Length: 90
View 1 (tube, one colour):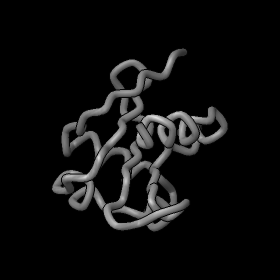
View 2: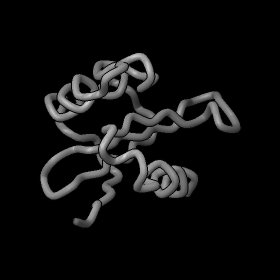
View 3: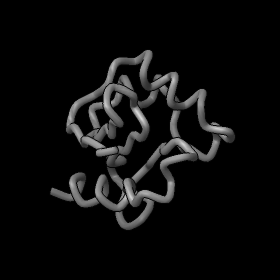
């Protein structure tokens, strides 16, 4: 199973499904509306056609607070955040 990373905004319905699938939505640190209307850099991670993670760069922040990620629980151990962070820093 390969994870594909895309530097483009996913469909709002995909984002909402991802956020709804996370047990603790507050831990995602972002809402679907916030992601879909933001002009910030966004990285979407897909397993085939399924959105499994989303990351973004927060404007005006530095350090670890500059990044927000939402990753499905089954994918947390796959280091997706690490790869998304690297792409967001480019």
